[in-house]
Length: 176
Image (cartoon, rainbow, N blue to C red; front, side, top):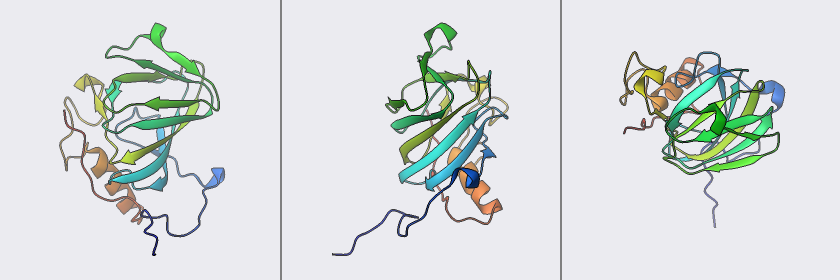
């Protein structure tokens, strides 16, 4: 029986910390960085990304279409659930913590005590929708539509193409 592998997983490879390629990502505030470690987040299938958030940065209430598993790689990850940012409702998760976040759950993050890095494992396509369109850095005011500059999958695809990579493919944005 021939084993069918996920895209990009047919041969052994590794990603060393010094080889992580941190990049800005349109769905985040400008100082936040994202790195794709495995998979194609913009397409159906498993993916692993890391997100680095500098001290003091807040990610306002948003949701993802996909279920996510967060692993805290460094710092303290503060996350709160709900549709309004409330610094008193964030819970602190130290290095090594694992957090399971069901899809379609509104939540918010805060780098309250310093920079943190989380690793996100999920089944794509990656989606992100802010509750308040004014919090969405992808557009002047409103949610991205498929194919627009703010389209999450499109952003990943364009970033990969600009770097000459084919590890990120097409997909869809998460529409309300």
